[in-house]
Amino acid sequence: MTVLWFTGLSGAGKTTLAKAVRARLPSYSFILDGDDLREGLNQDLGFAEAHRLENVRRVAEVAKLMVKAGVLPIVALISPSRQGRALARGIIGQGFTEIFIHAPLAVCEERDPKGLYAKARRGEIRYFTGIDAPYEPPLAPELMIDTVCNSVEACADKVLGFYGLPSLRSRA
Ligand code: ADP
Image (cartoon, rainbow, N blue to C red; front, side, top):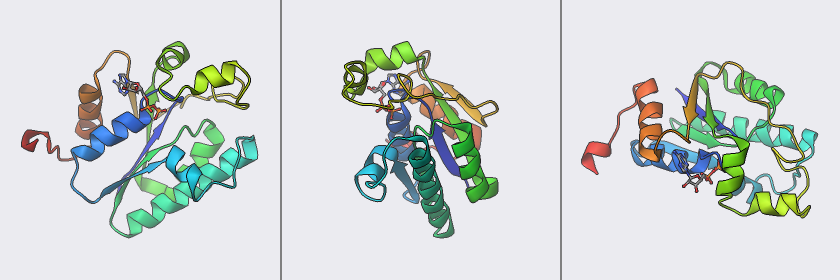
């Protein structure tokens, strides 16, 4: 079974698209959102490199368990390093599908849906991806979604179309 792994900058559209895709899938899918997980399972972790790797590792392990339970996980996680995503691919195995949710940093900063870029620029948050921590774009993702040139609906269509997943939109 597939794991949809959305990677990209904060504000690129991972959560928005995960919800849009989820809304069109049958009930056996579940969103694993990095922000939510940091409030619970990963609340002991910070943003230094080793902690980010551990963050990715735990999410990958949870996704793997979900697959075993017959659930389709949609992971929305910045997962900024190639090493971290390779680790996740190794844990999950064949079903791992890396989807690069892409918008340029300037656009993400302009959107700033949670006000985090502003805080990072003011120095109130450290190690913020794209500002004072790196984001390594995937070199060979299974799919890249451009959230600047495409609407949310069009982006969700691309994800579902690529995997041949059933869209429930016609029932909406
Ligand atoms: P992330 O989860 O990657 O941090 P969010 O989904 O929280 O990003 O925020 C993305 C922002 O960009 C939202 O305000 C959303 O409405 C906006 N947006 C504009 N166009 C798109 C698109 N095509 N896909 C996803 N988000 C988009």
